[in-house]
Image (cartoon, rainbow, N blue to C red):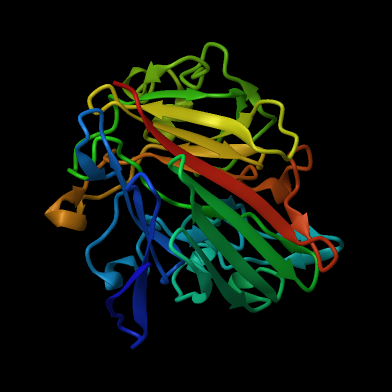
Length: 347
């Protein structure tokens, strides 16, 4: 395994990169800050290798980044709409005063350096401790993630969190993909397909309201391959208007806690295909609507809609929606999940 320094961060700690490889020559680089994915290098239909993951060229650019690019997010990913009650106790998360919500736990475990527990040529496990009460969220816990790159060009992400009390835990990775490579170009010509018959409608603050809604007759009917461009700017749909595009949780069909295919994305230009499998009940489909053109890797900018996310998770703000699957865990019931990103090529 190749190990190299990414650089010394503002806090004096070193961000270190570990490179995973397989027998096909696929390469995935993981860095210790935020247990983040730094690069995913795969060939296209002509054999040309490209990095298909957005990111930054300097480690300090990840510290506090609004887009959480490639970082592990938790203990609660996505949004919580203010105070919530958990088994008779009220918790007051540290919300943004402008909108009254907390997003991605305010970077609790994302904007910190993780410890490497073990590694080999194709696998690495990282872990971090978080303290009860940080960002107003409960639970002293140990969080770990294991990345494994297999010879079928699949990147497995196995998460585990052990807490000492009833805790709300909803972990994900905030990777931004572009199957045409990092160039600042839009992903709206990518073709997407989701195994989802329902999505979660949200208000202007991206907070869920009501029950899961059928995708029938909406821009979220992605049960057959469609270009992202075909529905992303539907002005007749308040959901895509309020979200400035896709930024919604889709409910995976026939969820049963086993690995199921959640989504498939294809690029006709490069022939690259990405399949996303998960043991979780939902995937947040986000099309980089708020990417602001900051300089990224290779001198290219992370422009508006230049990447898409498949954030596997429980539905956002589930603690306020008892009809959603509840991501509540305790000392006798640790959090465990698995997500797999499989890369292939259609010629």
